[in-house]
Length: 279
Image 1 (cartoon, rainbow, N blue to C red):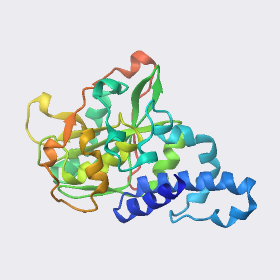
Image 2 (image 1 turned 180 degrees about the horizontal axis):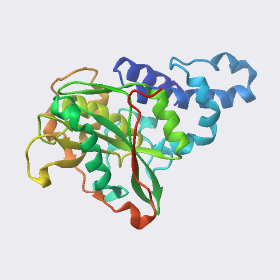
Image 3 (image 1 turned 30 degrees about the horizontal axis):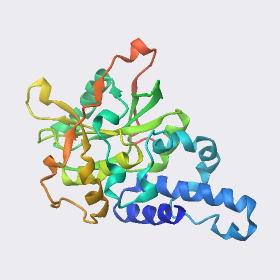
């Protein structure tokens, strides 16, 4: 398992999925530290890390690992233990824990992204939240440092995201991004991005906000990757926009387990934290 974590971190980094690379490497380093503390012969593995500044958050990681990595809380076996097996990703939407997101906060995200949307530049954010009574609730949207184009958005400074999640005592429940010139769907690039979230947490959602003049019901939608295509995306090493066995619109599905909620009724304070340009 540790060998796979290490290899996955390298593959993710090569695919520019730095957040997932960092998570995989942290799993590896955490386990190696536990081994090294009991078996001195393995101490040379202590610093086997390619992720910048990873050691700086190791102390917090030790206490926060179960909450940081959603699959350790999932009722399902983690697919990372048996990568490549199609059945490992097979979850009926009826088996998924329900996940709720605050529509008011999503509307605020759209407002914050509007300057970029007018310039036809995508904006993305990370959905952070908690589990309560076997339900998942998005509380905060973190807008990280990023580089956007008309049809893509690349997250930067992953160390800040990880520190934020730990400090806020939350877990990552998915992501959100805008489509300034398109309707709501997941592109081939989006499928690869969401694969990382869904592999760690089967319930993870990808909220897409269209910048087009469309009916309210078509303005915001929550998607997930169809389980039957998880193996295909895992094996695909292509980058940029590319073809899969089907058009990307038919490889994702709207989330039947996702709905909106009023955070005030649960005593939650939902907010947006914009980290762009902050050090």
